[in-house]
Image (cartoon, rainbow, N blue to C red; front, side, top):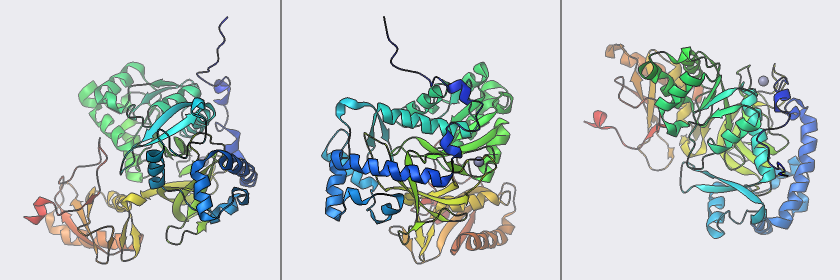
Length: 466
Ligand SMILES: [Zn+2]
């Protein structure tokens, strides 16, 4: 007499494996997507007007009526929502903040975002929200090459409420693939032994961590990771998958194709996914999230054109429990293209930095990760390892930005002057700021690895100050 009320995977998951993408919206014309967004935005505003104490208060203070926000274009006049407001909202009205807009009884799940600064922030989901999260994440995994029926080794952290854990597990299950739930926190040995025992077709995790895992394979298993039969490496959670030097290394060491995905806990899990073309991550979320590209200098909304650079701004449409409007993600991206051989219609981006890391050098925005890209590309003259020495207050300097770059292995220190000049010129040409580069010996700084390494130092390291 029992009635099955939950589903572990979509009934049509297997059939979708033969489609060019997970969801039809990925191949729908942008005008049609925009029309859907306008309609869903109006519905979302009516919902918030009725249910969100947070936005009622915010818009009243700003003199904005919900009914004035009728199309994506109207969003340009609406105030942003920033992370600190969400922290304040959570503190004022636990557990899910003043921006909780669904009844507590309808909330079925929560997750936490660690963030790089401050306390974790908590996000609530209704059943409808949870299904949306799973569908969006399935779209990105599918674009990166995961298919129903695959075994997928889980290399993101499973703990701490992080969306790379349980929600990624759920999305893999939802799409009819099978998650091997070891997790980064399960440790390198267990991950490698599971890979050797089970021969998964796919591995997901943070790029630097998956490099570390593969590098340990000869020691742990007595064979290289490239002999484990993995065909797809799916990376996210930090920049890296889109940096040619890191991507190439991942592909070589795993003997597999590597694509990346991007998202963020406040809106969902992952909602940008790279296809086989490996030319940037597509917007695959148009029916659930409106994405604007913002010029961070002027706050003007930019057109989605090849070469445009800006910060991603997100508005959830159809979100029930923790809806956000014009949320400043802090992710700074470049639009790589607006069409693609794969047929997906969403623009393709690459993330090059976070607002939290941004420095302003004589008025020019500089991201340490962008400097790292360039230094990585200058191997083998460099070791690919660098640090910014930001020995000034705050994030702004009128001086030349000090950058420490490791000499390539086996290179002669007598060539340091030429290398220094070369790095400085590359930085000036590519990133439009003046650096004061110091070449330092090889292996002085921690390489990208298990932990995210901080690329910015606030004090001169001992070996230089002595
Ligand atoms: Zn594509």
